[in-house]
Image (cartoon, rainbow, N blue to C red; front, side, top):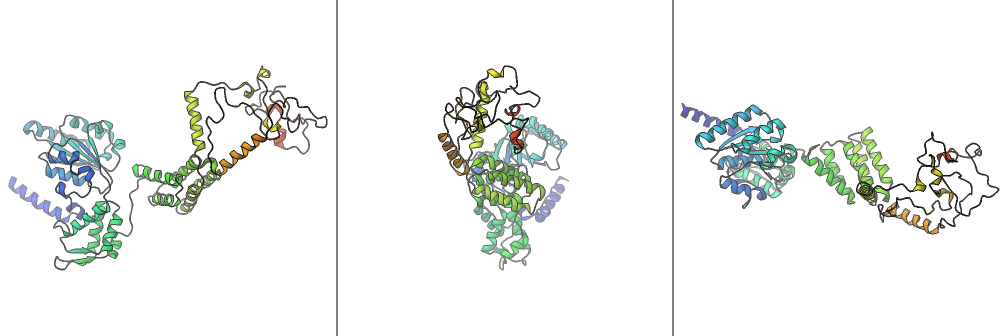
Amino acid sequence: MAAMETLFTEIEDKARYAAAPLAVRMRPQSLEDVVGQTEAVGPGSWLRSAIENDSLSSVILFGPAGTGKTSLAHVIAASTQAVFVEVSAVGGTVSDLRREIAAAEKRLLSSGVRTILFVDEIHRFNRSQQDALLHAVEDRIVVLVGATTENPFFEVNSALISRSRVVELSSLTDEAIEALIGHALEDERGLQGHYQLEPAAKEAIVLLAGGDGRAALTTLELAAGLAEPGTKEDPRLITVDMVRTATPHRVLPYDKNKDMHYDVISAFIKSMRGSDPDAALYWLARMIDGGEDPKFIARRMYIAASEDIGNADPMALLVAEAAFRSAEVIGYPECRINLAQAAIYLALAPKSNAAEAGIDAALREVRRGPARAVPDHLRDRHRPGSENYGSYLYPHAYPQGWVEQQYLPDGLERGCFYQPGVRGWEAYRQDAFARDRAEAEPASTARPKRAGQKTGASKTTAPGATTPKTAAPKTQDSPSPNASAEHVSSSPAAEDSNASPSKPASS
């Protein structure tokens, strides 16, 4: 009966193998067949040594689709003396895991045979399902081989990570893809030499694959299906047109909330910061093509406008705001143009990080420095005893609109936080401000523009200033007919920016 079962199983396996896709039939059978990934499984690597010595411990294979994670698992299955068991996290359950773990423990205790448990797409298991593996992995009842396209440090339990070795696989190089295609064309498991590729067709497959070996073999198989069946003596030519017909559009890998999402947006921001409009447009196109939320893209530009450009070009913030508004109101596909315009503007704008650096320096001082008191002359005037706070000099009362006065608390000096950039509007304003200060008279000798313009205990005129008899002060009770609302509101009760309408002004 066992012989009959073995015979029927072998027949079924052959039938299943013959119907399998080219990418499945071409899976490597030994480490020598593995294409690329020299850093992960090349000579001298930990994983290669562990497989060759049959001393593998639990490992999690992490990398993009089509880089050989499942293929390496099958190489391990063919190379090890242990029993190889496969469970897919797509349809597997905790009951499946417990059943396999119980069988593995029975094998280990009864005959000393180890079990390698391969869990494909392990990130699809939830936390409780992953926890079901902990005891068995900890006690080496099973050797776990997990495969995931997501970063395991985010998607796999930290307890399981600490009991396993993480091996990262990279996208295949163009040379590795070419070698994979060539091998599939000639191998008996593949196209058996019945087809040939014209050079342009091979280049097209490599380009369309984007480092994905499975995608390359799938495209080759589909293109071969468009040609007449050939033989080894008379192989059929696969043309570039057949390749393009088989796979008309390349879909580059992109996820909206995982590693690729953050990698591409990071490249986009750094391209704008680096003043490279071409790179900014490329990464923007990658996000648009991947279906990224346009509001997410616009929010990042909103941030970059202040973080990387700031007052070197204040208009950048308004451009970014307009881009965000277009993403909200218009949406795809038209808002791609608005996003592109804003990205180009931000890339070409002069750069300054003075705003970000300044506020971060001030926050460090606030959080780590001593508690510093507000200078008396800057304090709110609407409380008893405020007449003893000292004189506050009102800058608008002076010809240059500025007067020398302490604004920082004691122990801090001007320039301790804000370091202006040397480009754009910020540099121009800094130079103009320096000229204004140089031309301003010292507070001890400066005279206000109009003596008596602003009266009240919260402001004083310059020492020695007199009030011309012809210039009667305007009050809130009797404004001139031409006085603006803004001028009228600047009565003593509204002088201080912290004044509350409910508090009477000092007399």
